[in-house]
Amino acid sequence: MNAIVDFDNLVLAAERLGIDRALIEIWIPRTEFVKAVVDGENLSITRRAEPFFGWAFGLSPIIDPEWPEFAVNRSTPKEKTSGFTLQGQWDAYGIHTHAIDSLNKDSYEVLRNHEEINAVIEAHAPELSIRAEDSEVVAWIGIRNDAVIALGALCRWESGFHVLSAIVVATSERGKGLGRRITESLVDYSYKNGINYVALGVRADNEAAISTYNRIGFKKLNEFNTFSRK
Image (cartoon, rainbow, N blue to C red):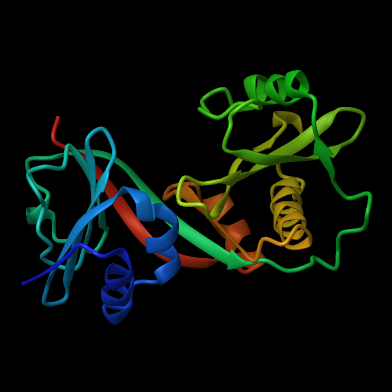
C-alpha cells in the first residue's frame, strides 16, 4: 500500500492504472486534494468537500470511513458498496476542442440577458441547479429562432479547467438535433476562445445525450456510481 499526498504524484499514479489524467485534473482540484492510497490496481482519493468526498477506482478499493459521500467506477463489485445508499449513476466525458465546420457565424450567439436565460431554464429544465448569474459561468451560448430555443453554459470548474453544463432544449423543439447543435456550438466557442479541452458529466440513463456526445467525438473518461453513508 502506497500513500500519496502530492497532487502531481497522484496524477502519475492514476495514469499508471489507466485512469485518464483529465478526469483527475478536472474533478479533483489541486487545492482540495487531501490524500490518496494506491493498493495494487486500486486507487482511493480524498478531496475536501463538506468535509470530504471520495473517489475509488479498481475492483477492491479502500472506502475511507471519512467519506460521507463517494464515487466508485461502476465495475466495482456490489459487495464493496453494500450498506451504502446509491445516490446516482453518471458518466464523465471530455473532448479536445476544435472548430466545427458545419457552424457558420450565425449558428449561435453569446447570451447576456440573465432574465431570458433563467426563463428558458425555468420553463424547460427547472431541475437544474445552475442559473444565469452563477459565478462559475464563463459564457452562456444560445440558439435563437424568434426566441431562444436551446442554450448551454461554459463553466470554469473549481479545478480551473472547463466543463459544459445546463444544456437545455425547449420542450417543443426536442428531437430536431438542437442538442447536438448547442453542444457543438459550446465546443466551437471554447476552441475560438483559447480553451483546448472541455469535459462534462451526464446521467447514465440519458441515452439521447450520450449518443450525441459520442457522435460529436467526446471520449468517455469513466462511469461512476455515487454513494452516501445515509
